[in-house]
Length: 296
Image 1 (cartoon, one colour):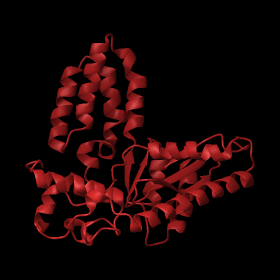
Image 2 (cartoon, rainbow, N blue to C red):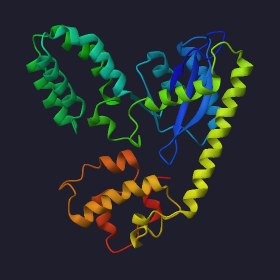
Image 3 (cartoon, rainbow, N blue to C red):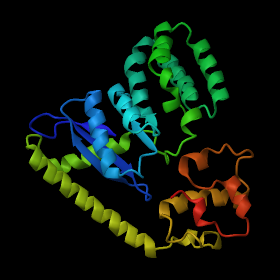
Image 4 (cartoon, rainbow, N blue to C red):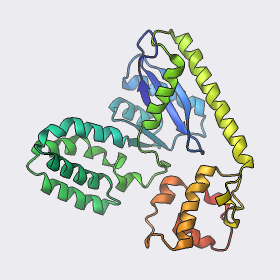
């Protein structure tokens, strides 16, 4: 979920809401012209989006950059939705604000390495240890530590692995899909001086073409069986689960087959992907994987 600009002669921001299909491809979900990027504008836009979705449907996860007005609006309209902050935007912010504070490339590399340890800590205990080490190694950089503590750590549950690996984000924790969708849309718009009616017509064309592509892929996957998935373990899900999902399941099936799975199950794969992990597959040893084991 992200705004794009230079789409119309009135210079109105265009909120672009992008979804993720079972094929792991992106699709346009909603477009809203905004008078401005204020909280009340976002609340109205998301309320309209919620009407489109209907009462029984809502996003489980929304990824966006640190736009406080949008963050607050999501809390109002989708209170049960998990909000994740784009890690790429955070790293970009860190680079812009801190690199000049380090005299040598070696010091900067050490900083980035220890910061990445903080971000990628697998659980809360590991995060506490990584953060203590981070503070110890960079205690002379008071501004850097203070900035991170007050700007980013209050939102740690929204971007640190220790927390985000507990929710079903299906591998999406950056907003690159939205930015890619912006670029695709701009190819249809071509110019930034069209009126809203002209822009709407071109948006509709983009959506219609995308819908045709999704239908074509759906038809293809109903009859196509990847040779490496044509095994008895998959007989209940073949042609009923996307090739992408079967590919992810197959990786864990191979771990069980070759004994390369981790000794302890973290639960991260099942929580984030909605698919059975290698440890869970042991329960179905010698049986076919049931369809209800796959996120629907």
